[in-house]
Image (cartoon, rainbow, N blue to C red; front, side, top):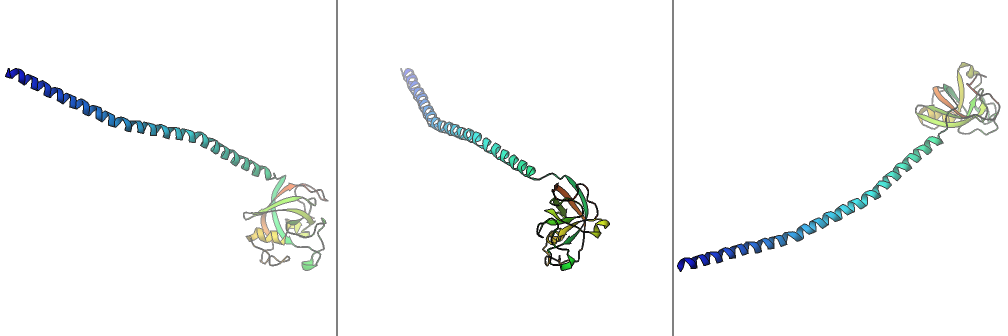
Length: 209
């Protein structure tokens, strides 16, 4: 009788213990499930947000690249190709008819003396020329004849005073007639003919007067 009662008590105790474990397990499972659900939902939203951003960023990058390529192409296209190029010794002048420094009068091309007006012994008047020296460049045009006798010694360009001084050191002349330096010539000035003028003269390599 006592043995049977003991068995009943052990069975009841075992059942209660197992039931407790089951309840605790269910509670723990119930506590974890919402957190995992929240985490999964957050991950899904993050993935959706990332996926939504990627397609929007790609076209922007492609568009920026296309615009950059277009700008480069436009700049390249805007730069005229030289028809003829070479280098020479350049002198300077400012002939405005005032007689200063022995000038011979107004420029032969009919245009008034100005910045960017150059003289050549042979090129057609109105020829567009780019001159470069010491990393600096100026685009001008042939508006006069010169430099006369010096052209026989290889001086094939006469530059206006402002262009001469700018190419020399980036500065400005002391006046229209004087550069403000001791330099009378620039050796190794690079010239590029961008377009031929329609005035009197001959195309091709410059020739002495």
